[in-house]
Length: 115
Image 1 (cartoon, rainbow, N blue to C red):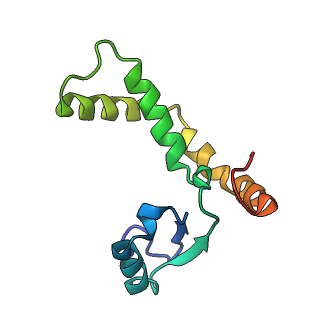
Image 2: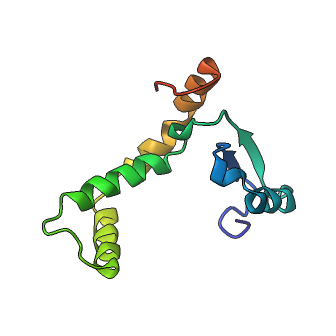
């Protein structure tokens, strides 16, 4: 993180999902808390994480393939090819949606939100 975000602009989103709140994850976060700013949000609010949109895009792109990738290596290749198919600006658009997502989350206070 310090290499990629050497300007200290990293903010970690803790979604409080059970796997992310495991003892191992909690210990790691405590040990590295000086490196990260935390944004805590209610459990079950995964739509705040743009990675969900990216996974959804990749899932649909791979599902459209015929025949489906038969081996793990073929799946990796299909995912890499699909990654290259992102429309220009798609990731930037997702990034720019974050302020709206935060506002929606803060208004809802709990549960799923619309943004």
